[in-house]
Image (cartoon, rainbow, N blue to C red; front, side):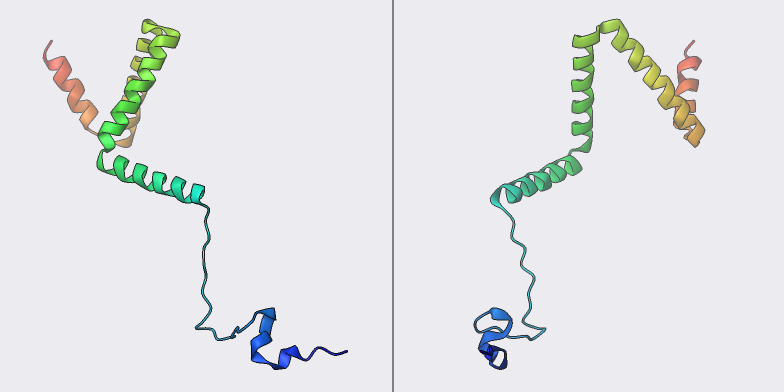
Length: 111
């Protein structure tokens, strides 16, 4: 027996009362509640860090230094911080940032 449902608009694409108009097609994104909650948290985190960037940055730096103090000790952490400062200063000097030179001149002018 032959299927003649294709001739009727109610049975197109095996959906009842469907139409093939381009204007009627919509894309619907379905996300789970857990994914939606995570995306909301990400958006709130981005908003907070964009408004309070320095606070976030220095809080994270303080946390890292505190963990280093507790795990490897004071003097090793101090050595890491000094080497980090030297590397950062040299990188700024190579990039052409004059602030480090001004700071060094100001430090040595005192003595």
